[in-house]
Length: 214
Length: 250
Image 1 (cartoon, chains in turn orange, purple):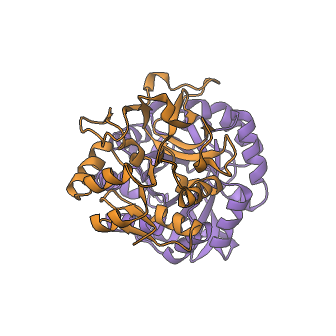
Image 2 (tube, helix red, strand yellow):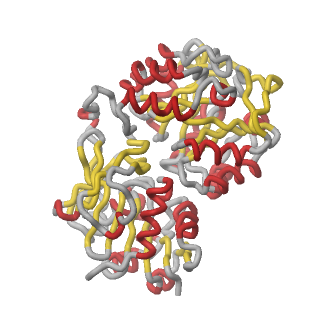
Image 3 (cartoon, chains in turn green, brown):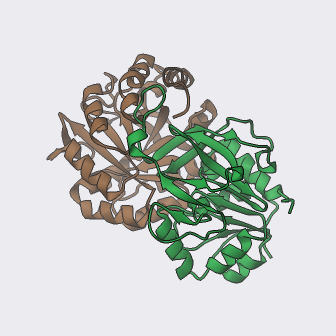
């Protein structure tokens, strides 16, 4: 049985996430797997993702992993990253394919007509760069990470949870949006902790140690 | 706005060229991985790597050095890599090695179908590098001019789904005469995806000018090479100047 599994459902490069986890937790068993049995047996589950949500959901279905991922998101320490966050929600403006629906809410595109910063700068889509993340509330996953630490983002869509209480972190581009969500055993980020230097590695280390209170 | 240190790799060494001429290479370090570590320690939040031999040969030529760079900086920040990337297998290998973005230059211009396939196969990982002079695109290590208009081509590539554009004005790169504000501004206004400016970043004044002129139109970064290595531009000062001018963030 592995300590942590990174779910490989055929959506691209998972090595970075796995390597970053190995870096922060050299004494743990970390595997990248597409095997439902391995995922079911892992103590902690990481769902990464990139590309478009409809493609991710299609790959999840085709790989036969929807059920085990859904089960993991409802039971064990679960970290969603980027599309791995978006897939937890019900719908996305990116396409008609529904998400897992583990969390109520939708994923929306940046409004191209409103992409001007307070100082009048035009903001491009995708949002590609480092932005300070404001911690909406205390959470074990934020341990040792100063409020306002910068994380790396690369995305054109962002989540809008139906329940604002799910929001664990926000950033601005230019309007504030939810970039980290937390509920029970789930923590998920729109940003990429595996590309976010010290703050990102700290977040991954926190995930390895995290014991959600149910 | 990010200052993005460039590591140009030729024969396993970190070099800078003047105006893309291979014979004009100045070796700044024989250990590109140590150089990457240095920039990470200086606070760089993105690195720009070029396989110069690969760009000439059309196939990767410095994979070992590049793999060392990625292993040394632990993939802790995004790394973009260009030079000799002309097939999907190469892209896959580099992404597996831990490169975040591959930059497709010549192959994008000469074979747009390849770029299209790459964007489909590796969404979110493809950046196009456009090198231009007087508004026209150049290819093959700047040795050949094409008739393609930069803005037209950039718009087409944007539709393919490329993540960002690196724009280099080749009259200026390596000659330290400053980024071509006018040309970069024209491009930034025409497209919606992020632009990284390249070519001839010379001093803090250039950083300030980019922040004042280009950042308002969506330029998110500027690649710095020779000036950093010759000590004419201090990384920390440059990034601080950018943060001050833009007010932090991206």
